[in-house]
Image 1 (tube, rainbow, N blue to C red):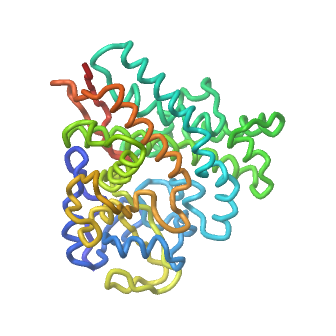
Image 2 (cartoon, helix red, strand yellow; image 1 turned 45 degrees about the vertical axis):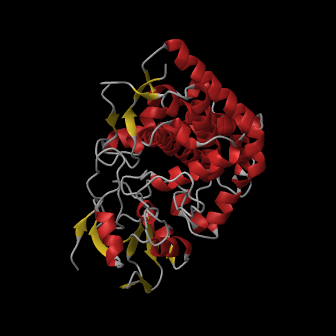
Length: 390
């Protein structure tokens, strides 16, 4: 079959890769060549992406094998949960699922509001301009996920370096990846030992006393939650501010809980957060997808960012519409691997964006400030975002 190199070249700012519109129009799965592991099928329409993510004839367990197509150099780089199929996936995920319920998020909201207020106080005290990424979009989810997990402030200093090494698609050396992975596992090994002896009200204590998990699984799951819990949320927060400002200002978020919640869902749909935005599935048996017979053992990449711009589902999908009544986006995935931390991400986006709107209604990019964008990472977004607000 004719193969196209994937991922596609990253377009300017947070525009969608133009190739996806053509692929959606063709209504077929498309053969692509991955940076590592060979070729795979790419599906881009909402119906096909949802089908692949939700049908258990496609699995994740085989993706840890060295010859499976992938975006990162090392097999299994996407973490423990993303490398498991049922029943192991249910067993591991179930150990911490209770920590991310709607009830837990209601209890956590006042603390998130407090963290946000403190960050905005610091920004105002430091004066204009401020880098929204370094002073707000990154420290907010770092503080929140570390408190939820139970990682003390003294142990958070290396998180940015670990994330840069483990999520890089191009720049990190193998030795840097291995060192970051080893250090992060070492941190959680020590913290889990502490919680086994002195439990607290945090996720690490839950993991330390989860009899259904091995020690290695508990350490790996804690590492997964730390990385996933801050990197994508921080990027989504910065991207969302950029999109709102480009659309006219933070007032586009709306006022009141329902309006803010609706706009956050539309921002999740609209922002193409991933540089490729995909995780591989492997077919357990022959399956027809997107008009193509996918053979057992073949890899399929279901592109959620493309599904979220599908005109068959969303009217005028290339336009941000905070009034969109129905937003069945797939930004958090679908099926067994639907994002465990989605309620926590939503909470931070709602509180963070609404607090910015209230405290800094005139927020705007600093003139001539040299805003820059991330490259060579699985996650897209501003790298430096200088803003003013007076």
